[in-house]
Image (tube, rainbow, N blue to C red; front, side, top):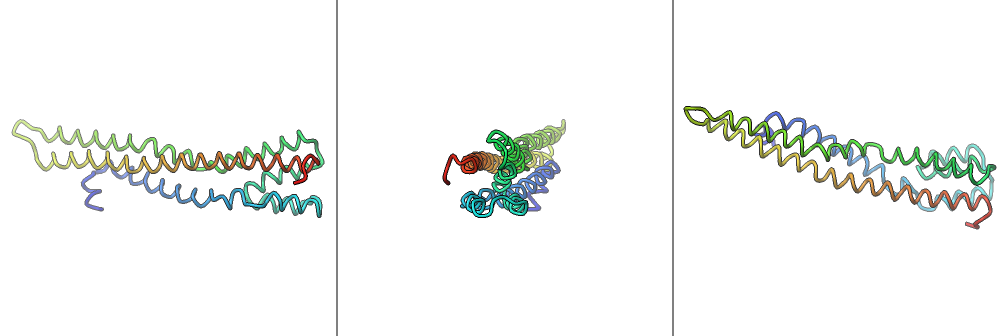
Length: 202
């Protein structure tokens, strides 16, 4: 591996840094965006049952908001249980915007890495081509410098694509996952509002 890095030249170092950041972000988002952690199953029914048994209290809402992103959205509705349907919806939408922003954390960075990695690889290719042309002299070409220039060009191009492809796949996957979570949270929040206003039994 070290020999490959040496052959690829100094342009490979920014790509190595980008690959480390991309792997770290992918692992972090894989853990953070688990369905059981974002929209725990059965949470809405448990909230409705507890509300009907004990009503709303500060401790209950606080625990709910700290439980999960879905709990934070439902908690915003419970905090305004005595208000009109419109005010409850506004509170839920505000909480939903904050939750959605938190779920999208680091995705911009991952998407940026996916976009610029091929360009960074192309930059390495240009550096390699410069070395190739620099190896040409009136007395003949320098085979060592020529081989090194070719190595720099090819390794950086390949490594840039190697970083960009999985980064783009995971970026699209995480964006779709966040969108599905947001839609699901909106649906459950609407159900909560309807239950609290007596328009729905469960």
